[in-house]
Length: 129
Ligand code: ZN
Image 1 (cartoon, helix red, strand yellow):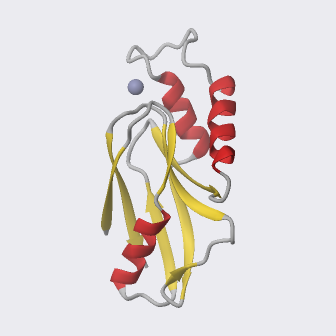
Image 2 (cartoon, rainbow, N blue to C red; image 1 turned 180 degrees about the vertical axis):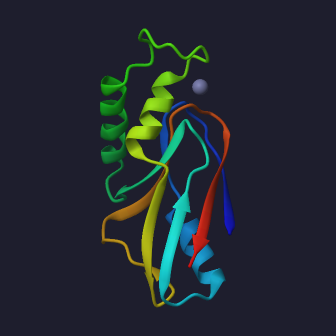
């Protein structure tokens, strides 16, 4: 298993980790297989979305803010229930097919680490099968 270390700088942000994941695939020498990418945090997530226009990530984050407000009558005493909810809505894992030692992604797709309770030091696990 590979571990990608990520230092986030905002409370909510998307960080493109495609190059780091592709690097792990190359290092593994696996030509054909499956890459499992897993986020071991309860207030962060992983998603695959557009990497050409940064306004797409901005729109997603702004929409998530409206959908799951920071302040509401949540029960969780830590004060970050919105981040837990966003984490579950987006999901903690994505899988990408590997062909010719390369991640098979669409032309405009990138793999994003989604921070919802930063800034923090984070990890992403990558397992190549
Ligand atoms: Zn919490």
